[in-house]
Image 1 (cartoon, rainbow, N blue to C red):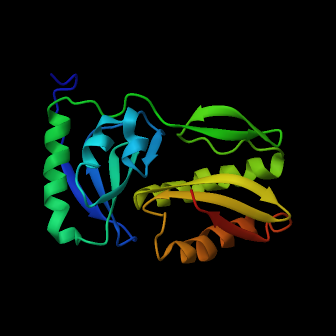
Image 2 (image 1 turned 135 degrees about the vertical axis):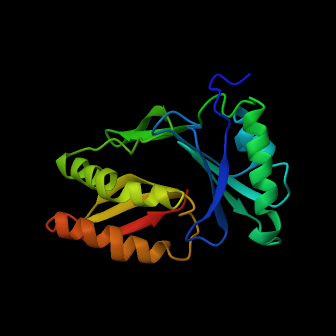
Length: 207
């Protein structure tokens, strides 16, 4: 039985990345701010819903955040062939009261130049080492993250070195053809405008 009597309703929403589709729910799937990404079935051992989605041979990766699931498909299928099937499956799965995630995945977060602190993947960026890095994270959180989440993705700060900001992009942003334009024309331009003495370039690191 569902703790919340409101049934789940799922609708599909296209993203700028043609390989991904965002499946949005009318209720939270994870606590606010939490995210989780699964790139292989083995990654999904603690995420029953992701494990179930990987049973579909055309599912390449699964990204879960707040009230949506972003799915990346294999090139062997088109979205018009599988979107309704996935939407129906997710709706039925959730309304049966099945578990979503038993335990959030973990990542290493930099602290004092060494990777020593382990946290669940959520809103966490790498720990800022100075005020400039802290300001960069504030800009990402205030101006960039909301727009990226609307498209079914996630952006996090990794490091600032010699004026180069390294970010990590997940969900629909990972492998998106337009992500380079977003990175340069959007994120880089904004950070250079707000922090002209500290930021020279923004690059993305694959995760």
